[in-house]
Length: 145
Image 1 (cartoon, one colour):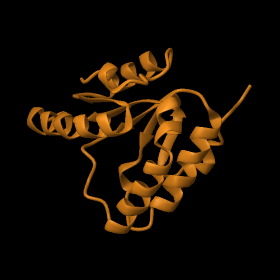
Image 2 (cartoon, helix red, strand yellow; image 1 turned 90 degrees about the vertical axis):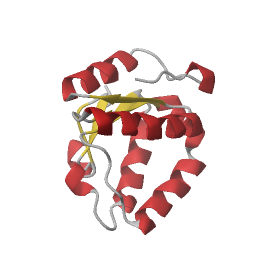
Image 3 (cartoon, helix red, strand yellow; image 1 turned 180 degrees about the vertical axis):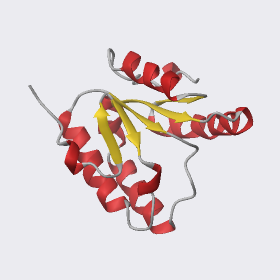
């Protein structure tokens, strides 16, 4: 049976896999290098997963944003094969709606379903539901929460 080395992951918490939770405190200048290494490990693992943000993602340092963008562009198709959903956990209704609006663009660009929900339990339910099937391959099939 394949396993993920939980100790390797510092940007993402993989202890609830297939729910991969971004650690908010890890988003600091220079984090993108570790983020890339962790995403590559998740791609190699090959099992469907969802990425959960415990809060609306903060503005990230420009160089990290740039490095992640280059990686995302180069790995778009591989990521869409295993990343079933992106989920923002946002208790505030107005900020949740804003996150849902932003997510629609990301969803279309990467072919990965995006959800903005009010609680971690809702996010985990989405993650585990998506783990039982592959993500959509056609942008028209993408679901919005």
